[in-house]
Figure 1 (cartoon, rainbow, N blue to C red):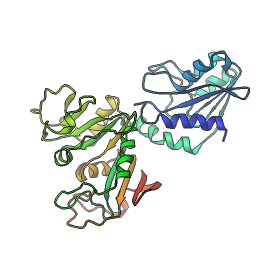
Figure 2: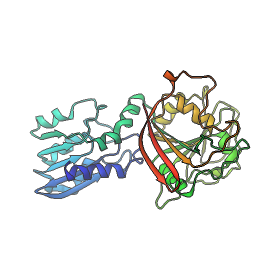
Figure 3: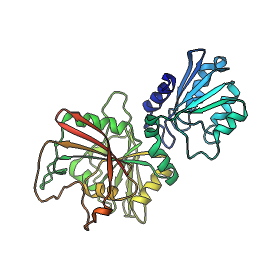
Figure 4: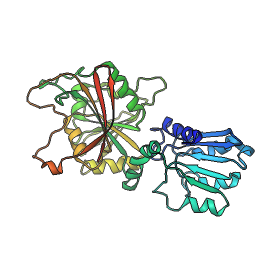
Length: 347
């Protein structure tokens, strides 16, 4: 793989989780063996990576090559099409790592008609970066990661509700990074009332996600710690028309049916592109049974809790045939001292 295409992919990976409904993209402009411009799409509505890189390169872009992690866009959205900027800059060659299957038109043809050489150079690292984005964009729902911290026998708590701390401090730090890479974190009112969590990102220059609370019956204690941090919006989804609050940063969203599907579609309309689910067994199980989970991350502590299975992270009301159970594939594993992190993708 070209080092320059690798740089573009690395730039895209660096901004993963901060572009909202848009994909993270990196671009590098090279002329006569020198990097003359680099760019990354930083947030929805900002200049795309190609435009930033070309603006940096200025006249040095003429006759050069631009390496991009994703096929350049061809449509007018918050910004003009990137193919137009590439043509205007006098670029001779475009190399990109992933074809954008959601584009309304073929960018290759537009560029080639302008006399520009175009090369699609498939890269697995970049493909993994965009795989879930393409799926969820077609569905108009966020990309969903379900996170679980549990014992070896899958318990999130003992039968008496004791849950602090099953996993270790390194897991806690890793979860902070997870939150940083998502637009919003979702939990249920049961977990909120039982654990009094804050769902913040306590890392340097960390981005605190919007907090989403599912409270179908409206059972909310507004004196909890999560409501004291006024810097981050809180959205509460409920079917209880009587649930109201005068807290400025809290929005009550009333739906006639608080199904996973309805909530996902509403979150996407509100600009959420990546959602992290950190909840108890009830909400976790709802998402794992749905068609809206893209990734599952499990942190296992080397402990066996036992008990009745009251806080088993996945449970169903009925027995599911083996041929119909949700299936995942392991894409990565990591030891965090004595705790094991498994990253799985929904098949």
